[in-house]
Image (cartoon, rainbow, N blue to C red; front, side, top):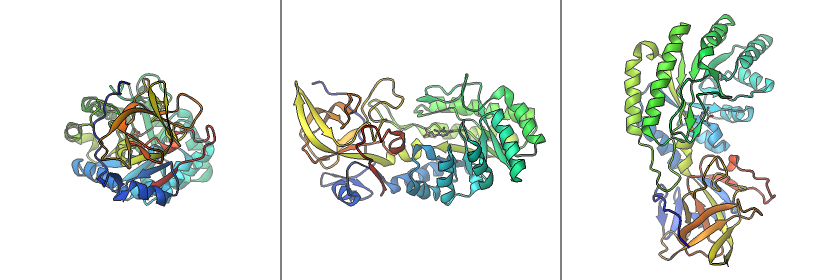
Length: 410
Ligand SMILES: *Cc1c(COP(=O)(O)O)cnc(C)c1O
């Protein structure tokens, strides 16, 4: 069987005596202390290092927000809240998680195209910033703010007149369910002014999972240009300009990490160029995946091994139901393997080509297709890397009723 293309080596986790270490804990011991497989483990040191390293490169004016959607585990959100400047939420439940953390409400923003009456009330009562996604939503906020006598902090999410090139998932430009078309924004800001809401600024999110520095540079150039022109048309001060995020991480063979240096140099240049307009404006980068994705692994256990017509199958106790993205069914056009290892056989020299499949009765339940892995035995621990974001909560855990994985912050 011809093996699938090889991934770049994953070196964020150390190893000792053939065992993968998650924040110093050997994976076998970690599995015992978790009490079950499968589980997700997130390494808090890796998360802290990632934020600290990014912050050390960014100019002071640029703030780092964490987008909770990528991994809303409460312990992780609380941990990261001590390292970032703000949190971005997209539902009432995420707002509650954010408010439980150490971040004050005025550094929390709430986006999302279908905020309910109840969620808008929660947002108003909390004092967070509501990123307006439509003109109907603006009218609802005006109404609720009057009704409850609560001040409203609002930002306008802009659907820009350009697109993020080479993004894994486009979320701005063209016709969109997200945000308010750029050409409507001056009227919307005028309405915010007459209704006497607190205008916090603009939110321009263009897409996710981008590994190309030039594409991000191009998006940032366009965002600053658009924000400046909207500011000029509206004659209003901005507290904050949220320029989105979209920083990607490498998942597949042939992908390399994002080269941040040119993106940051360009941001510095933009801050200088637009100093007259935005010197007193907080520039916000909202990031999910980039901050936590590489710090997490999914761990499942080999329960059976079989051969069928010349191919070898490692059957494991969790799959698509726990980790939809690794199975290739979360927005991938062509299925590719996530980087995978046998976590208790990191020094093995004998390799063979295998398929790693989950417990579900569907051929979609495939974690690794024709991958070269150490020769495995029943009871070995299969590790899927790059699983700290869009894993646990992005998976259909009730499908086939096999039970839930656990999550631990190590
Ligand atoms: C999903 C989302 C993010 C986070 O995207 P990542 O790719 O995880 O960084 C940030 N902002 C908004 C508005 C989002 O919808």
